[in-house]
Image (cartoon, rainbow, N blue to C red; front, top):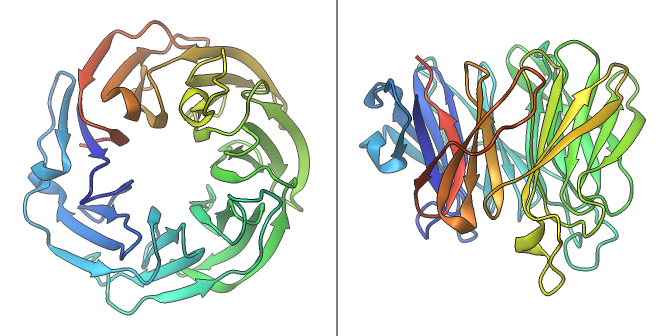
Length: 329
């Protein structure tokens, strides 16, 4: 198992990685000017045992294009576009892709307006991510700054530039999403209220709210649904974001069972290293790999048949990991 790790440093910032078209797409997430970098995937070699490679192993860039947004932090690859979420500028940047999957300059930019109820975190839009539905016809764009989702249609592998706004509970600060492969259900991980919001995508009715850390919310991270749609995993970074009021819960990953109709049952809260900003289920479905930024390490946890996490079986030291990507064959 070979893992490509994005690390936080002055060059990459809080980077994000995507794979497609035989290439690796990497964001340089900087306030003074973000960019999208493209590398040949063939530069990476798979391994039989757990190994970690950093972005430097990708070699020379095929190209690098400047993004019009600030602190670009998420990539969604469509057939003919690369969709970038620009956090600080609160915008969406749409790069056309040529036949080889290379982004073209002068992207289209969609600008959002508004604010939320949090006095410092929600003074303007903050687009944190975008997520493609399982049928490929809908793109959900997540605005942490305005407590909103924006529903775009996707046609011919491109975003259609008109959208429906879905307002979320005030002050929740949505961050990442996961679509159910079995039902018309969308799970939304919130950063400021540290919970999972469950919506039906036909009409976007709110079906439920499930706390991840009710004691001291303000650190929701990433969310991943198992391939079979039966288990939901959500990370939270309570000790690193709480300041003087540090939660007894500790940073970790909550495991929910999906019970149908959008209902969730909390099975487990597994404490991990500090600041689990990102994590991934391995392609064989047997493990979760957690990037623990503030402990400077990657942690590997086995998954049992009931979806719960066992004890950490391996750690690999690496400076400030913020994104983990398992290299596909």
